[in-house]
Length: 216
Image (cartoon, rainbow, N blue to C red; front, side, top):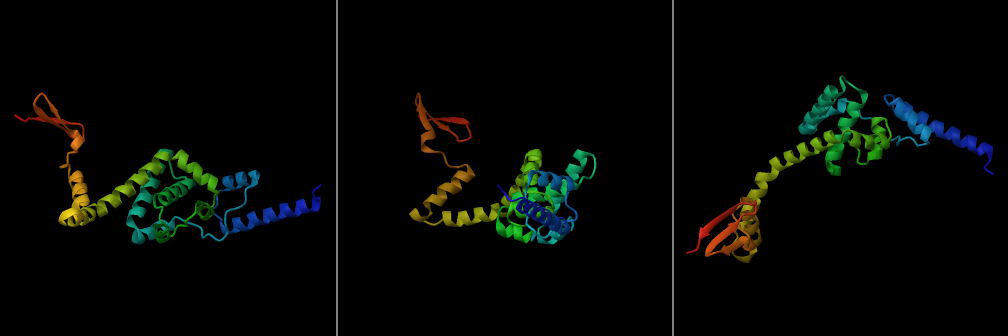
């Protein structure tokens, strides 16, 4: 049988860990903490610096796009929920965290890499954060789309310029890039899309349209 004294010691140690965590995270969501303790979950990592709303102001210099997205999410959630709610800050931070998967980008934003560390910094468990992904799926999707479009708009011209420079290289060295460039421009018709019917040459374009020319 398990020693009763050992069980009591384990229980006291568990409460002490949560007590230390709560002192380090005074703005933690009490309902989430209570639910985690009832399940017997351990507290998030103590070493993580709390993420307050003031961090979004710092993003105005480090990453203006992240700052704009943060406040846009907050405004949308406030309108949806009929007022400011404590969890709106957490939802906005997690949506941005998920949309910047690169470690370097998260570090530049002052965000931890792992979701468990992020949960500790926001004063909740990682289960709560994962629940936000499901409950606010549209918010997370819109955030990813906005950030992706921004990256595309930023680099699209430079990527095409680089591709064009390699496409004009004579001979076989530039053949693959010429083909890709013409495909992007919509000027390349695949060989299998060319058919002959009743003496007429038909070219079926990739977008599904069809044009015909009489071959004589």
